Length: 316
Image: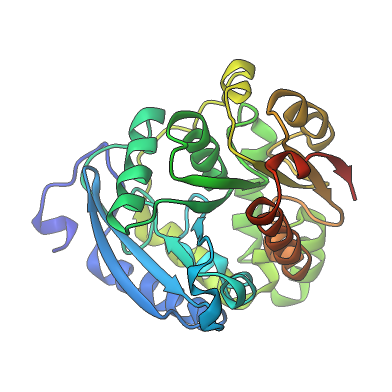
């Protein structure tokens, strides 16, 4: 049903109309095809709406019983953003990618869930509806805030948390919003200019045609209705007991990497923090092989060793 025929709530995300939504879905499907084929798609109900879930792998049946990975994408997109990562991760573990209600995807939001306790309740309900009692939770950007918030508020289902250049560690500054808008305008630049702009902005969206098309369609089709999340305090981060892995781009504009390289392992017991060179806000897109290998190694450490084995700060 289109916006013109139904009343739209001002406090939940929504599509502008059916035509733009369908164009966006078509762009998403092109990007999904670049990653691993989904074994199944399903919808699970929560107090905040319907959550679309994509299930991948593992390719080795013997790995079916391994602790699964759950992926939470960044703001303004959907699970298609994980196309560089789903093949490698699902080769070794079951993988579930969730479309966050309130962002453009195939989930349907009915109640606001930007508040920290509501966000944690949504994720706990979604994992429960999937029958997942223990997961390796991975989040990027806004999804990084969601997974850090989960580790603080409702960690019972979590085997580990991996935060990729996440929100939740610092207040979102003006430099990040300027970068977002500059990156969006750069997607419309002449083709010959895009490689140079992508390098200057540290923005892979500009030079990946399928990703660029999805982002452009998203901006036209969907209206996000939530404020930027507030960072967790030192005390809140210090309460986290879940094994924690932080990966940041060396030229990130969302966080100050060297500051967090020292701060996070100091506050979170046993946390591992690393910086990925030659990237900004999207290490899992710019350097997927490296990041996939690091994430899988961390998860293997957690599954096979004491969590205290996965600690320390590394600048690479």
